[in-house]
Every structure is written in structure tokens, then in C-alpha cells.
Length: 474
Image (cartoon, rainbow, N blue to C red; front, side, top):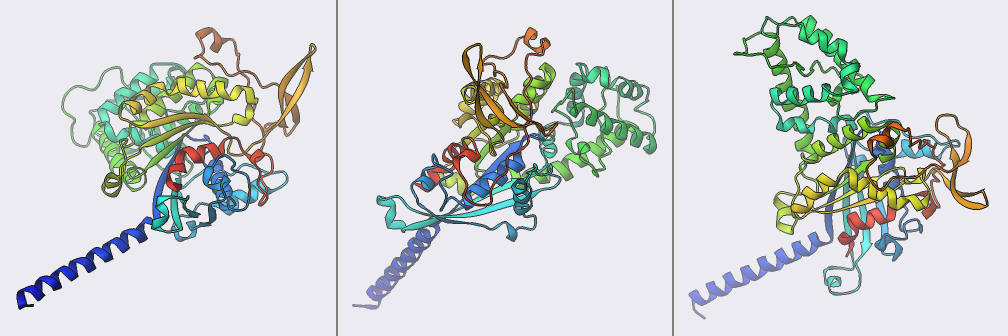
């Protein structure tokens, strides 16, 4: 063989070797893959309890039968799971939450006040078939973050200039209950000459009054959701910003150093230095999304609460990056390809009402679900309870057997057995809202054991896992 032939042979050998190395690298990568799950929900929607229960059940899925409808667990293919959250600079407080839920009496975890992260490594056996050529086992890394729901409220501000945001807020404050609750603050805002030189002390006074106003609107009896800036609702957050809610926008150029110029600059700084980094670092690269919704709260609180939550959810969902999530797109620009809307507190109604709860949630988010369907996104609604607080019971009424619930009331620690009421399968009419038709009560948690988990400790958590992650184990 001449020099040219030997050179071609050598180059060919090198290419074969490179191809062999690349295939080995791909085979190794095929044993490890990642799924980023966005657990989305407004304040007090149950994100922390959900994440705690989800992680707890997954960590024990290799030896417990608590997830019968999660195929990889029910089939005994989970080898083991490991919590890698300690490697994060902001680990999720799993043990603290489990300790509280495992006490007697148990108590709910405290509301989230800062961001924390969960990373689970789930080692599993591949199913029989062609994929066995890639290895007998593989590992799925599941990433979740927990965060104050109040932070989520601000994501729609990324698409709004200051004047647009103020106009949206003006429309909200034209309606009850905002109009009456905020009457004094609105009158004070309309007294100011917004083109005059700014007085920082007055802006601080108006900012603090607005933050207090938002706290009133989020509390009973109003329980509103669409409250921005969301960080104004958190203790210790110093956000000196409020919308300029005026009948007409101040005409003319904005003078430098004016009230209006200073307030606009604060809005831009808040949006670019606080909201945008949060979105880019944590929300722009998720693969799948779970949206937790407390439908029973909206029914209890009335039409204004229901409408406000609808607006808040639709605005937030528009901030996420939806689209088909194939392999190449996942490598370069992940997009959410599957969304589950979960109605929490399914344990607060009887089992025969779970279908109604599914249907009611579908009606609440039908616009968002329709838009996602147009983009080719797979969606589903499901009633769940990440931690079951009640037990099924029966009562005899007028010779008939009535399905009831037994549990401990959250507000009085009194044990009760009652029929909680029916969930409507159509959106309530104006008369339904005024008749005080809905009176679903809150229950205190039942103890969650550290071991020996059972299907009775949750409702549909396994079905949720199968829908959100099942294809990753095939």
C-alpha cells in the first residue's frame, strides 16, 4: 500500500474511532436525561405541600405501593431515588415540611417566602424491548422549584410598558370590590400634580398605602388574586411602586425629575432588575407545567374572586413559552409541551364530586386551554389532593345513604362528619353567587407517615405523575 493509501486508511480509522467514541457518548447520555417541571400556582394554592408529598412518595416508590397508577412504580421498575437538592444553593426544605406533617397533630408547612429548588435522581429499569440495547437501567433527573406565588403575579408585567400597566390597573380599580376598598387611596392619587417635581416622601407614603391596600384585597372576604406588584404582598419586601390609576393619562411630555418620571423609572427598574431575571433563570427553560388551582376557594368567596383568579391565571400562562418539544428543540430552546391543570383539595369534596371538580376547572381555564390546543400543546384537567385530609363516611338521611366526609376543621380543630356540598358543572349564574350557595370548609391535615406510605395518603398523585412523566420511563 502506498503513502496515499495508508493515509486514507489512517483517516478512515480515525473517523471510525471518532464515530465509535461519539456513539459511546450518546449511549452514556441516553442513560441520563432531565425533565424540568414548572409547578405553577398562585399564593396559597398548595405548591409547597404538593412538592413535599410528590418528593416523599417518589423517594419511597421503590418499596411502597402508594402509587398504583404510576406505571414505572407499579411495575417495580424503580430501583431507587435520591434527593440531590442539598447540592443547590437554595435547597427545598423537605425535611422541615415532612417533620411538621409527621407530627401529632400535624400542621401545614409555612407559606413560601423565598425560592428553593428540588432535584431528584430516579434510577429505573428500562422496559423489555428494543431500548434494552441502550442499557438495562437509566436515570431521570427531575428538577422543580418552589417560590412565593406572589412573584408569579408579576410575570405579565414583562410585556407591558408603564402606561399599559397603569391602564390595565385602572380598569381593575373601576370594578368592585377594588373601587370601594381603594376609594381613599384613589382620591389621594388624583390630587397629585404628576408633572410637578417629585417629592420622594409623598411617593413613599403612597407606595406604603398601596401595599396595605393590596393586603386588604387579598384577605377575606375579598380574596383577590390579580394584585401587582406581587412582591408588595410579602413581608420585608420594600417595593416603592404603584400604578398611576387616573381617569385620563397626564397629557404632554414627561418632565425630568417629575413624579411621573420617577414612578416610570421605578417601574422599569423593577421589571428589568427583579421580574425579568426571575423569569429567565427559572421559568424560560421548563419542559412541562403543572398549574395548581384552588377552585373551592373561588366558589366560597364569590364572583369577584372567581373572575379575578381567571384573569390572573390567564395573564400568567401567557408568559410561558409553549410549543412542541422535540429532541433538537429540547437541546437548544426547551418549550413546554404538556400542561396539567390540577384542582387542589379534592379531599374536601366527596368522591362522586371529583368529576364535577374536573369539569369546573375546565370551565375556569377554557380560554387558556383552547389557546394551548391551537399551539399543539397537550393539556388535561385533574382534581387532586397531594395530602388527603379527610376520610369517606356515610350518613342516613330520610332513609337514604348520603356520602359524607370525616375530618378535623382547620378553623376550630373540631372533628366533624358532614356532606360538604356539590361542585357545579356549569359556571355559576348571578343568582348562584348572591345566594351564598357554596360553603366548602377547610380541613386540617392528617398525619403523613415517614414510611409505609399508602394510596390512601393522596388522591390521584400517581395519575398526575403518570401523565406528567410516564413517557420518560419508557
